[in-house]
Image 1 (cartoon, rainbow, N blue to C red):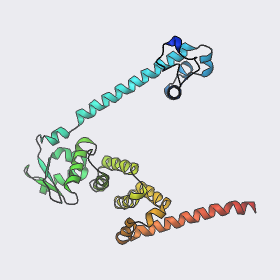
Image 2: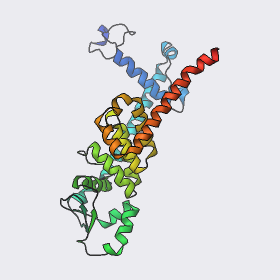
Image 3: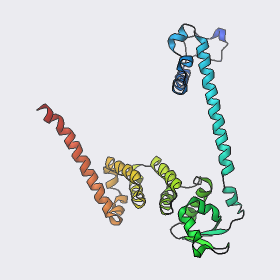
Length: 280
């Protein structure tokens, strides 16, 4: 459909002013919603259909100008924040090994990773205590071992400590191991980061694994979300190979799942019988 706003035709040949395409209509609605939400002086910038029909073009122009000004300010703040993050990013010091003074060693083989004592101590109270112990008051070639982490997992941990995010190549499995590491080494921001990442990727096929990770970390919210998804998709989850493995390794979680399923069944039964009792 030709549109009187976005049509490429000259204005004299455009269709009547009340003809508008779906995209422009949605754009106008979004702009009005933006103005209504973010403008404190609604009387001066709110664009109403009645006002426009009576020729109140100045009010509409002011509103749109104000909206663009707000959007420009938000864009500038975002740009400044990105520049600040690039300035604070410590990955350059890590990757170029600038004045590194200690090695962290994975447990499954692989080369140790040169890092900085001061940064490790600043990011975790556990690391600070480890570095202050007599075993670590030694020359720069000393190492700290992380026997529970593979080389890739340790790389993820170190890069997060320097940059505040996991590497782009990190997988869902790395999120699990990093959540456990965050709990063990008391790194709250890493814990929160991994929680959000795991919840965003939560689905029936990985709910059992997430449940086990949440149990290890005593993460109540993550455990509740995983349990809710398991009970909702019980037919798919309970008859899977993953559930058989769970029964062998974590029988107590199977008991919790069974109780959750029975509780849900009882609630549904009670909800179904309540209207009948009321009517009688």
